[in-house]
Image (cartoon, rainbow, N blue to C red; front, side, top):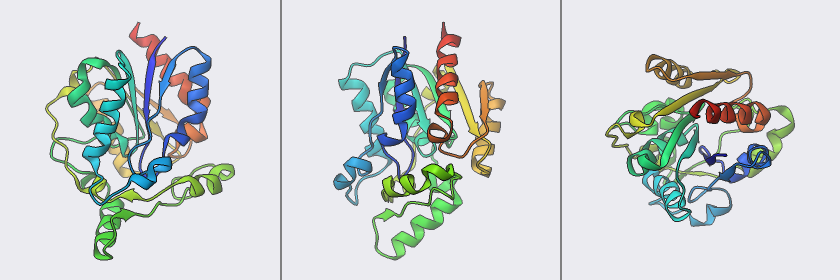
Length: 235
């Protein structure tokens, strides 16, 4: 059995992993899905200083204080930056590294460098004296029709510093033995197409799922299958 740490993307919270977590738990795995500071049920903790470093530390501390080892670490979308940063501290505790329709950052890059819409939204928020970026609609991310109103109600503003802080990476991510990329083909996105191409060029196994960006909501069964296939590939 495996230990999964599932890290959500911008504007989301642990709530988005509920379906996948149930499937993994049913098969006897351990599942941890921390909500990042300032989002979801922790939205009351958002401050102007909440940033990417805060979110990296959220996951590092979850793994540290829960004493997690041999972890399958999964990062969705923005969390591609988060888990890349986590690997710098927790490399020895990570067995598998999974980018789920996620950004593939290099050292010195911020989310704003990888996502022009996020860069523009961050600039607009700054001009207005705001400290957070309002959620994008579920329809924008091609979430299935049934879940769109619920997702819109659940999403919360994203701290602006999460888009602006740059990562410092030393290669820990690349040293992790098992890495995969999962692309949601129902969501057109040049940054994620580029991330998939980069992963393939580096020899990462990859999967494509015909659904919207929130794979954990649109195709939870298929996502759980892929994650467990990754477990089997490790044996």
